[in-house]
Image (cartoon, protein in one colour):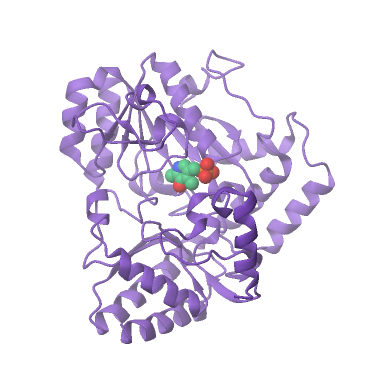
Length: 426
Ligand SMILES: *Cc1c(COP(=O)(O)O)cnc(C)c1O
């Protein structure tokens, strides 16, 4: 009752809708009082009551080298001391652009923005400007930020018109988005056969991380690439989460699939607001001031955010960074699976790179419909039991988890020991 978390949440609800600045933070899915954090260091975060947690959220992905890595903090401090922003070009933006082009061969030109939402929203406008077409395709359960045309769910009329998944999104706008099932190759083929030549773009999370973790079938990604090429639609890989997270070259490197446009965010900002979209030169040249597709941003390429991003990207390029990160994630998911199995709990887990999924069902799901069959009540019970023991997992059964290079073998072992204790008393 006298908890400072509870006091802060209570006060926040008077002045911030729901007491939070982004809905999932409210713990509505799992119940209880959200944590207010005051500090992070390495793999740990401390809440407003000074309780320490091992952090498997990592600010929803950006903190891939852990909180307050000294190289990142120093870069930010140095950049800040030179000026917080100019609204004019800086040399570091060039360095970031060149680095992104170097790491990701699909990017011939790139523009920096401040959030993943901006990146995806603009990539779609750009695809429409480039193709002169209006319709887009997305997949159920994929999240691409909160712009109108992407807050859409499948309509009842099977093939074609999407419906708003948020109040405030006009039905006319949602109708331009067709929503298909993730990993469903035949649905993709049917849709392209019917309306392929009207489609400006397909946007997809090449590894889905916003409906828990869903691994793509290679055939799904390959079909997507082939159909977009055949019908002249722009393939947008939304790697805001998977970029620099599942490998240095993200999902496109891991699966060997080349997008026409790619969107980036999260890790590339190192915890500060930096994001980007880039890709084929002929498409990117349609952007203002070169071309007729308008996009702008007062804070785009902000020097402090770019400094944090550059410092983070330098660290992830160190030899064996992803080998180490992947091993940590695998250690965690294998340990948790084993603990659950030992105590007969219906549970599965998997990881790819530094990203993992936990599922209260016998096998990892491959689609949104399968994710929805996970036992949500079991997850919520597990979440709160772990939280009480100082393990901070994403506060929803439908979010992916993240490890950082700052997690130690001992952190992972401790997490598994605690889970084992919880499953034993299940
Ligand atoms: C987080 C995320 C976004 C939105 O990025 P914001 O910076 O929150 O606007 C878009 N796409 C994917 C795949 C994401 O994970």
